[in-house]
Amino acid sequence: MNDTRYMISETAKITQVEPHVLRYWEEELGLAIKRNEMGHRYYTEKDIQTFMDIKELKKKGMQLRAIREIINSDKQNDEQPESGIQEAACAAAVQKKGESREMHVSCNSGKSVEQRFGEIMERLIHDIELDERKEGRYRRLDEAIRRCQQTRKMAAITQEHSGKKKKRKK
Image 1: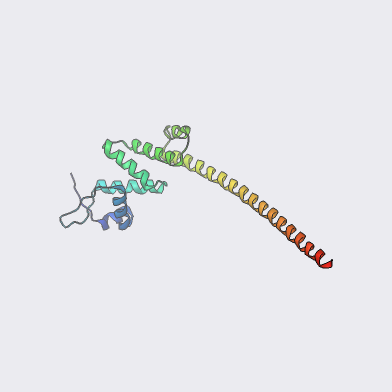
Image 2: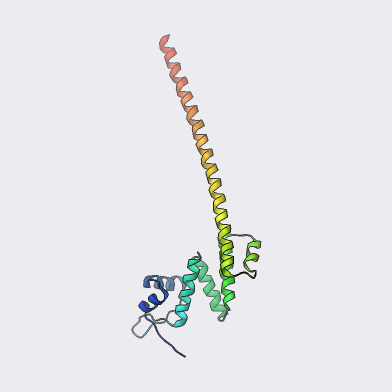
């Protein structure tokens, strides 16, 4: 078995991730990265694959908290098949958004990860567009209320001003 060790600079080049990001992921995700006799980190092929998986999940929009849960469940199952990781990633994405049970069921259907991710993204975009429309309505309502208040204020000032003129004429 080839037990090649890679330094952090080599690992950064392979994964195309900055070394400080690798150290950050190690700390935030609780990864058990081994160290040599001098205390320097070294990485194995398995560590590099873990970083590549993290990078892919980050590209798909997952937060480190959700990735940590996936990695922890992966450690518990030790030899979890790839589809298990995909299901966990999908479940975490659904849980993050707070979608309904039907969304979770559609996530676990026979579709590829890309198709499921596309569906989730379409739903998120749709939800965002709805929120923006609602926000626009509220903004227009606020503007109408402000105009009404401004008109009332102007009317009160005009009345007050005309009342002072009448007193002067007397």
